[in-house]
Image (cartoon, rainbow, N blue to C red; front, side):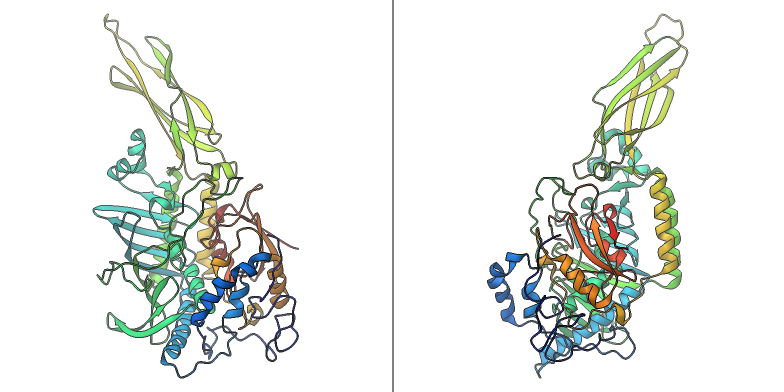
Length: 580
């Protein structure tokens, strides 16, 4: 991503110019005085979150009023840093509302830290799908987003398995029959895990509710000054603080250690554990159709909900949040390993087949007959099969009967090019009685795509083992802290074309060290949307240090690399090339 940054940096000063109180340092711009060493992270013993003054009401108008003059150089978040009150030294007046917001910011920071440490979390609640129907959810997730969940709508129950990169569904014949599965494949779908797009569920549970990613989003909400409210109330007899962020309402326990107990639609509760009703006011993301020319996702409609704290969040939701006990975490990992093993026979609903060449029976005699099936497969232009040039593994079933009596069933696997054609044969041997009657030979064929090959399974088992043994990502020390003057950019400032990520990476690297890394897509394709916003980037430069990623949109402590990569729509297709 090219271009130059002009104006204030996320550190609170300006790129390439002295701060208002003196010359900038290698770690950041100058201020009214010595910027000092980075403050300890909020989870350090004895740390007290400094009051975070919320933006003044006039700031929003100033941002919109001045944007035309600022974006000329592709500025990532110039006015954001200039308009937000600077640093951790800000203090509140005696205004009770501001004091309350200060307490809310402090408690939410502590709760986010607790959530980021949690190896497993349960979410129980509901959301409304695009049709306005209530969908209840009972989900267990690991820190990095491995998911086992049950979704219910009316009398239909769906079982979901996801690792954040792939989502699989188990449902009965009735569900698949009413949701467009090929008639000849309905029985097969009902017997196996079926890989789907999260679009089919209306919410990407792994990306939306992953504890690690949600914790990072909460911390960013604090650092961007988006926290308001903080009034005390009770939930099930427990005192909690009701905290408003830009896109959601978060309920945090008042008593230490603070932790998140509920997350709901902004200023409105959906039907869920509380039984309340209402409508959300969170803005919906207005995604412009991606331009043609090879971008990942070209031609696709707006995706599923990928972030609760984002512009594409569900319009009506409420989830109660509770941490899993050590035994429950252990049980969850065991179940995940068991379910992953079942994916060996999973099928891919994102590949369709057509027997457009028909089935011919030739040669056929009174002792044997060969069925020849000519077929083709079809995938979308944004399919990973095309992006990474992965072959489609077709599992073809040909059933042959003589006078309605089964005489042969052939199950054949065949590799095909995406959107390619293939021919499969099946030989049946039988004996036709010499009774002078006419006998009928019939062949019926169906095909499904194998969703998970052996290499996929091996990687999934390795990923599970790594998370189980390593646990949640370790938090950085002072050498991984960009300092209290760092102000992460709002995702809405993500530029369509050029920004200045190289300059941001240089600034970050000078402050904390680490390696410059470039995120790339396969071939000459664009990266796809980032944090819910479309762009036209072919690459993106970041800094990686001690397993954490830093760019203009991450917090002062960065994000665990796995969490950071999950912020991209096509995380499983992207590669990271680092210097050295």
